[in-house]
Length: 91
Image (cartoon, rainbow, N blue to C red):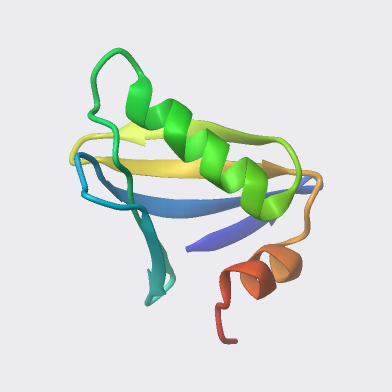
C-alpha cells in the first residue's frame, strides 16, 4: 500500500535476498524487489536503499523492517503520485 504523509511517501516492500539478479515489480499495491546480497551484516538493506535512491533520485530510508523480509520504505520529498508513476503503478 502507498501512503503520503508530510511530504514523504511510504510503501510496502517484499524483498527476496540472495537472488541471481536484481528485479523489481509491483503487484496489487505491493512492491517486490529481488536483491543479490544476503541479509547478512545489513548488506541487503544497503542494496535496497541504493536501488531506490537511484530510481527516485532522492533520499530513501527503510522506515520499518518486519518478519518475512517485509519492509516499509520511506521516500523523502516525493509525492505519492510521483512515486507511483516512477514505479509504473496504475491507478
